Picture 1 (cartoon, rainbow, N blue to C red):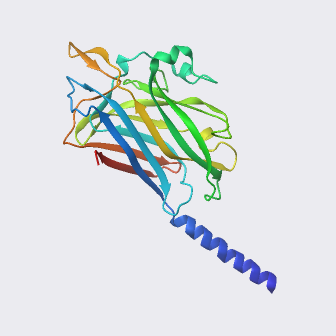
Picture 2 (picture 1 turned 45 degrees about the vertical axis):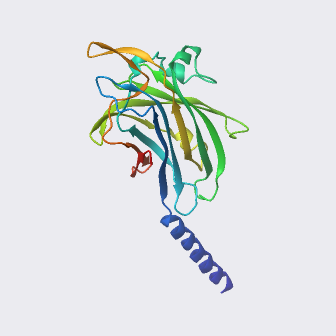
Picture 3 (picture 1 turned 90 degrees about the vertical axis):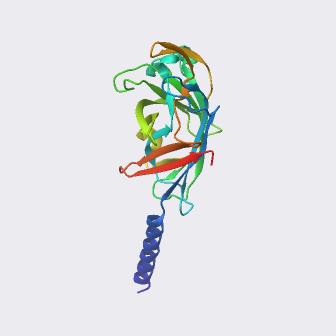
Length: 264
């Protein structure tokens, strides 16, 4: 009888634990969104800008967030001009242990990624893994970028910042979209299983991302006229504030979107 009672009690505890986890959902906040100088610009006369961007992923119950493996990121009126910057191939950007020297002139941004990982069945575990982020302008290639070009999201880490030694890149094609009716660029990327599940039975969750794209001037022709642009330049803005949007897609295909206007 005692054995039966203990079995029932353990079953109730397990059920309550599952119910608690089931009620937990990811939370998303766009924490940083700044274009400097924040001039509207226009498609025919872009305004070169330094762009700072970041987002945070949390959990409504304070657990480690569920794994997200696809991201779509866009800022209202911010377009990318990959044709204005030197390029390297994705293979060169993906080289290990560091990207090729040929990619040095293709670097268009830097940043950091904070991760938390733990056992797949226990989201209370939050072991840290901090990653250095480098954004590189890459040439078009089958399965890598689209006709608008793309960037390589380079990640590098190792002890003591992370127990794992990780070096490599993710391809992020650039797409033309409209945000609040304003022409904008959106880059989209998928995180491979080797990063979201670095070991059998282990989940890795992104919790805080910050990136910086500097304002470096280049001259290109737009509609036959020479214009100064930076890799990220403003071509418009609907009002005094600029809308930022990030779409998060989980492994099971569930989509969540965070939208924030800046300045707040």
